[in-house]
Image (tube, rainbow, N blue to C red; front, side, top):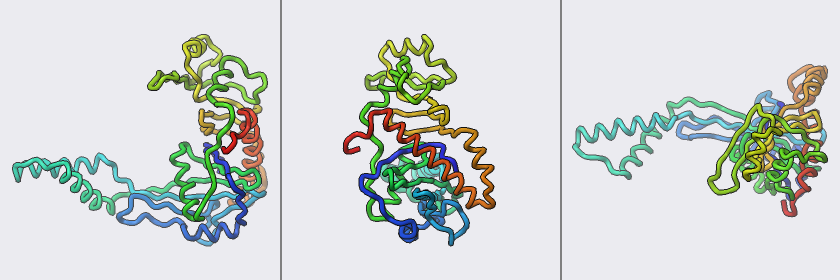
Length: 304
């Protein structure tokens, strides 16, 4: 259950709903199979698994874990396009005319409705946890768009959800650039071997470097040309490694091997107990990581 990505949100008002009440609320939007004519269906599923009677909220040490399940029909656009093209060719041959834009669009809609019930489905899970004490909501998603699915679902389920993306006082790209320049003495981070640089002008050049010594002359040349570091691989306190983005989203998150071994050797006898042990260790580590991240970038921006 270890998170691999972090989309970080701040609760702007206290979240004081007990786990049992939250579970009851989530029952109104429990996950279900995708309908024959639906592109996708999204609902809540037990984070630990265990069937329909399992809790929709996993509570431990004050943290609340949720899991949204998305089932979608796989209907590639190229399949629909080919069917439309075949129909257009048939009209040209049999009726001697070229269908207009509106007629093609309507035919495309008809073909989609015809093919959707025959399409295969696939499902995915999106995990998130809420820390009511520190006012965090953290989603394991590789993009803000994906995370917003979970945020929107929870907002619709509860009627409201006062959260917004984390905003800090110091621009991350400015600090990333200073770090790569060598100014890291007071930072709890160490440079990795990957970064992305971008020219500040609209539509400016983008340079991506992997397996690269970031203190090299090659990187310095890009910095001297005015490029900023907008993504940076780092190690935090010799424990967590990740890729930080300029919006402070976190990707390719890796926890220390000792922590993973500790979880594996916890003596948990079943899946639920193992999940609980891993969740406890992960949230404790992320609590320290998030506090350090905010402090490094000057604290939370007022109103953010």
